[in-house]
Amino acid sequence: MSDYEQLLERLKKVLSIAKANGNKLFIDNIERDIKALEAGEESPIIKEYLTPEERIASYSKEKNKPIE
Image (cartoon, rainbow, N blue to C red; front, side, top):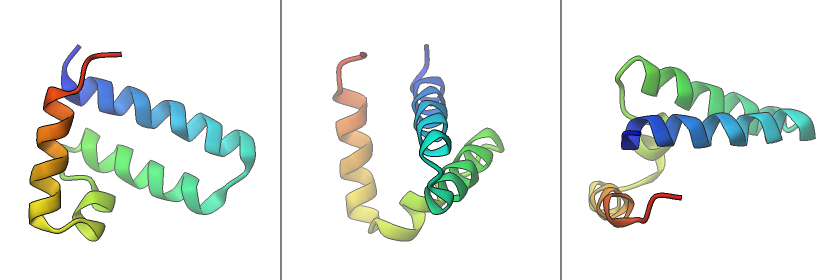
């Protein structure tokens, strides 16, 4: 499974939890991220809140993270 597929799988799990808890803001943000990633775009949350340096560091950590 690719990193992309793993990320989408994790986001969909988090989305189901957010829906179960009724957290509308969280639901909206996760759905927005899923739609962007499925369209081949960068995560809006990462784009909005992380600096370019933080994005690189986050990406590097994710690449070296063991597969769960």
